[in-house]
Amino acid sequence: MAEQERARALIYGLALGDALGWPIEFLKMEKIAIIYGAAGIQEPPDPAMFTEDTQTTLAVAEALLEVADADLDVFMAALARRLVAWSNSPDNTRAPGHTLIEAVRTLEAGVPWRESGSSARGNGSAIRVAPIGYLYQNDPVRLRDVAYASSIATHAHPESIASAVAAAYLVKLALDGVPPEQYVNHVIDFIGDLSDEFVDAMLRVGHVLQWTDEIAAVAHIGAGWVGSEAVAMAVYCAIRHQSDYVAAVRRAVNIAGDSDSVGCITGSLVAARLGLDAIPPAWVARLERRQDLTTLADRLAACKEQLTAAGA
Image (tube, rainbow, N blue to C red):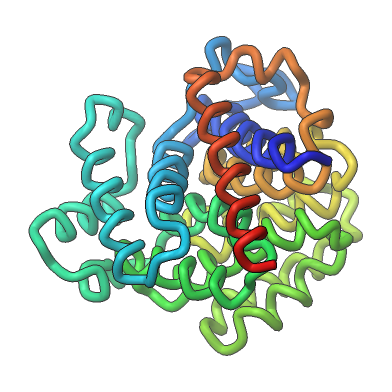
């Protein structure tokens, strides 16, 4: 698969998972069934509008493109600028989380990135790290360092940090073609002792893999409002529907929880592994800012090829 296709699959995949889940975020299962039928929401709206999950992912991507091979402080300065610009943008109308906005305001006030993050648990740093996993697929040390730092700036709770590192690493595993059933063990090994709560959430994936009731299985893992649950729920969906992007994101979003965030992470993992052909062209055609997303993906691919050539 060409690098450009990999990058496009990743960006389209996460944005569409996000867009599919946004209309039903905060809804109970009973209400989802009333509005969309027993199977839940099946298609993204047209246009497929995404949330701050994708918007902040784009901010991370732009920061990486600006200073991909710089030291952490330079990268984090670029990321802080991008997040502040997003926060003050008229596009910031997609109900972003309080923890994220509070931290970005703190960054804007001049507090150093190592001190600006909230100690509250949340998933806001885990949902935006897919470009880190993509760009540093072949440099896991750099991947870990950048994902870790990117979380601290807004979400400094150890569980949130572990979730961000894990979400980035999972994209690397997906791109590497690692079988999804191996994700849990690989990720637990990679994060080490960052967070016992994160490990507990990942272990719940193994508890439910053989359950026939997928709705109950996802609910057993969590609701997705904290990073560990969102990542673990995405891993479950990626394992259960490892050859079917559409089935994976449908399973991810039809929950009584943070539908768009779980859909976004799931979309990144399954699309990164399966590639562009796995995503329905009709879904891609309805994506808002599709040309912007395509251009960004192509720039990421070119940047990755440059980094690979420089390290060869």
